[in-house]
Length: 428
Image 1 (tube, rainbow, N blue to C red):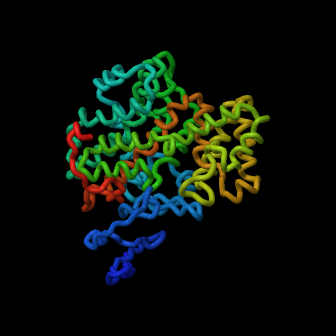
Image 2 (image 1 turned 60 degrees about the vertical axis):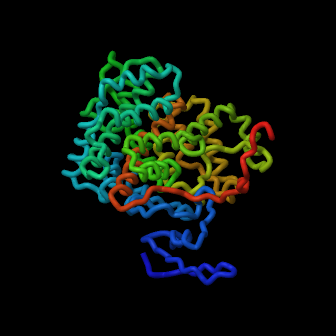
Image 3 (image 1 turned 90 degrees about the vertical axis):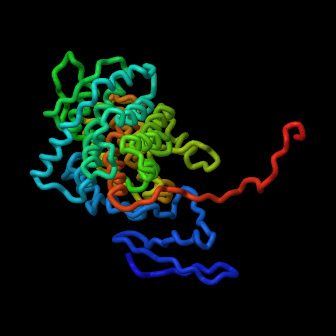
């Protein structure tokens, strides 16, 4: 913070003094909270220039392509950490020592199973229900089973709820997938790592022993880690806004899942595969590149560029390495979508149009390729995003609830009718 001030001059009024706050990184923030007493509000559709909260969790510099979790660059975490260690970092503020990491991992493993009666919830859905629809429902239903961690004013309850959500999300997600394909649910095996366990529950069957490819495990861990948090995006802001009403954490995360489901948010990697399938063949790439450059054509290349990152997505390089490793391991050279993806990647990195527009391949481009290579249906892509993002959501919720906060109540610019009198129906 700082003691700087700014002055707003409105015609016919004296100057209004507004505090100017300074964070540890990023631009200064103009505190407009006092404008209401002057009968003034700001207008900022999409909140593109509005800081809705203070947070010490994640920092993004979109111009420089920087993503920091608690001050640690995402590239370093991806190279040296793993998903659960990053979870501890986001939740607790610092990297754990060896004992803290072991204890944290054990706490998560102690909560991987879900109440057996939750199976009844899955059987209530149609077999062809979208996995995100199922996930929204069952995560919200957790509050009906875990009454002992619903007191949000109790720090211990908040911690238990966080552990439960991080631990149970892969189980619930895998159950959503298994239900959609008619296979039996697989119980978690707690001797496995977080990513291994998720893959085991996704692809294992009671007929076979547990066997998870370490290359695929590493790639899945990278996907989860790189999606763990991304500052005040739509779903995280939804979680905070829902939490500001005092709602329980399971309801808040269910709200975040609903926001993530939107194609402009969590559905981007699914859109990448749909785009590659629409192109269909290498011979048609130039046709679609021409369409992408035509501002009058509604077609857009999915997986390129980013609303926040105006330079490059720092997660994309790590995800590209993971994609290359998975494709090599699985011998996917004959995958019909792979040459299309590789050609598009080359064009985006070399074509002057894409360079000038800064339309570089982003994390969704490469994660979509990985998930498609693993034969994961596109309907599950956003579910996996939700698994990884759960720790970010619960960390922001925990941060907000742990400090004084106010219920979110945005204002509006009203453009409707002036006051008018009711007219009886026979006179209309």
